Length: 371
Image (cartoon, rainbow, N blue to C red; front, side, top):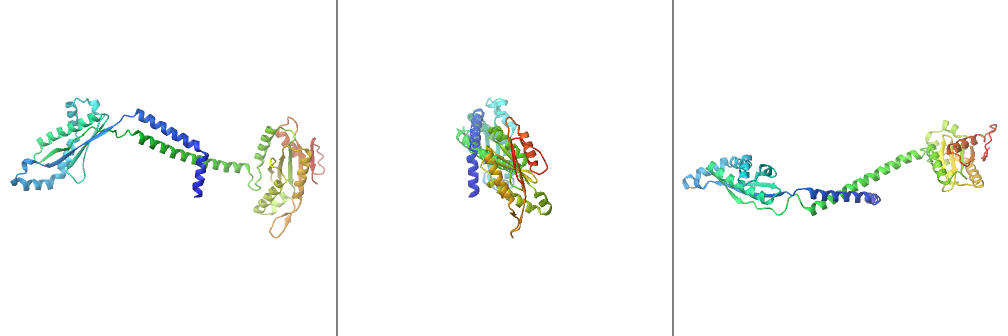
């Protein structure tokens, strides 16, 4: 039931694809019906019996014996007679039908199962000519067989009549079938498109989010900063780099799954201090980046001081209560008028370095927190 609901939602989201394919199938069906030539089919049936001239009492036993021994081969022979091209051409001349017109008609003869009945079928564009051709072939075959074979004779059982409806031209049926097939094809395309979008979303998430911390990757973080600055302008945008001093040491002594758990906890703690329009990303192996937009100096100072405070507290690592300290260092820079994103990012990294004693680097329009 859940799968059905999921597919229905996919179809609702991509309903226009189903509508377009259905409309296209409808139009194709109309065009094909307009340009197609109606084909009519008529049939004539013939029966094979022992010759009436041999049904005298003294010949009856002979006839019955021949009937048992040779009936199958005789019926097949008469089938070939009805299918003879020479016979067809002779009949076409007799009814004034040109060879080019005869080629438009498909003539075939079959033996009906478990019987002595032959069925002659004629398919073509003119129903009257098709019936005339079937009956003429039948009469010509009867004359030929009755003159050539004395034991069996062939006679007309059901004459051909002009059909009233073509076998390949049923507008209501054909259009309805085209609409149904178009809808099915559109549904398949819509579902495949939804699955492709889901796959692209997975790829996008793998590109956008860091596997270890679940924060944005550095590359995607820079992309978001670029978009945000293009949207809101460069004023009042604060970019901060949060360096975790002890993380490099911990990565050398802790197993990868504990480092991943630690990074996810750091991401969780930082996000709790951010607003809805702020952006958090993984800067490098030991650092995170935060963009506040828009943010006054007071708001930015308060936000980053809270982040430093929560990260300075020892973080539980094991269930038994053992904790570790990350010793965060934070450098923040303020965007300036007409400043490219690359310059802001570069200044953010430079701002972080002046946090450490002895660096001596001074950056205008920036401030630092941390030891």
